[in-house]
Image (cartoon, rainbow, N blue to C red; front, top):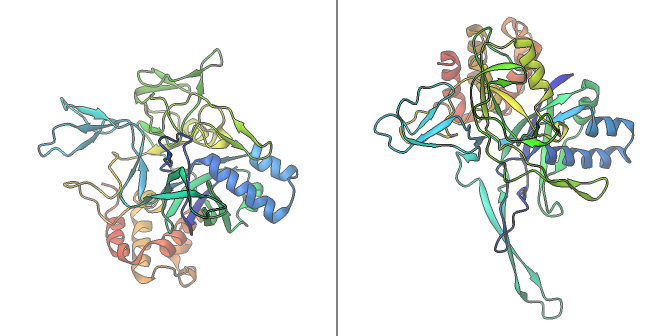
Length: 398
């Protein structure tokens, strides 16, 4: 089993409907669920390879997990974060998984997707046409929220190398609803290194997708906040347990029937583990949490620093623009490796390949996973952000 990085760049607007239409308006989820990515890749696979076979069924029903995709300008709000009601010089947010909230008064965030780019979503309005009069039908004006085109999303896939390797052959797919006129996107799937855990100390995990946990009787449970143990680990503290109001049901393409709705814990639930066994944590990250994991539910990630809104808020410093997952992970690399990537960011331009670097000693000293990450960063980091990120990489994670 191996880890793969997914990069999606939208060429058309993308609609991820929540099914909660009110007053003729349908809102959109702020992320692309793993189940939506899975469905889009399954359709693209069938277009390329024909009718489903045993390899198709293993890929999409058994052996591969598809994580959620987040735009580079968006992030799931950790429910461990307290938003202060009064902020005289203390900053608006305090992440209780890493910081002491003291006697601060406020409200915890709820796991929604927070956008750094306020124009990332738009509203599309349509109407039905009277076929005889060729005019708009009365009472048939509808609107839906959509992700604007030309946005980049990142996520992860975990599964059998041979199966995901075939998915990596796909270069495009249609994502979300109204795929005849929306949803066209370019897709890149590349090998990446597994999560790197700190050598010692506590470990903080959070969910990036709705999580369907079952109790001993097999019924869905919202148990989270206040739990003393978690998947066999001792818990320092936990934040979350809200009901996820969106993204729980769906449509099963093969059978043409709706998927069952489930009670799930909202994304952004956080748990702090007391000095856990590192190998067991890695196994948990690979396996995921709860049920319906192959559809992207129960996706966990390690958190290494206090949460802050993407793009920053007034009074909170954000250096180097919005971090991609690769750049953010690089901040924990050894100094020698960080300095090498920083120099290459300034030496090469956005869109360049790494061929000029691949005979150099510093490049050869990188692990294969870090070389793959360096290729993506050198190719994809916008020109305006290259110098700030080079400086940030030389400083490392503070």
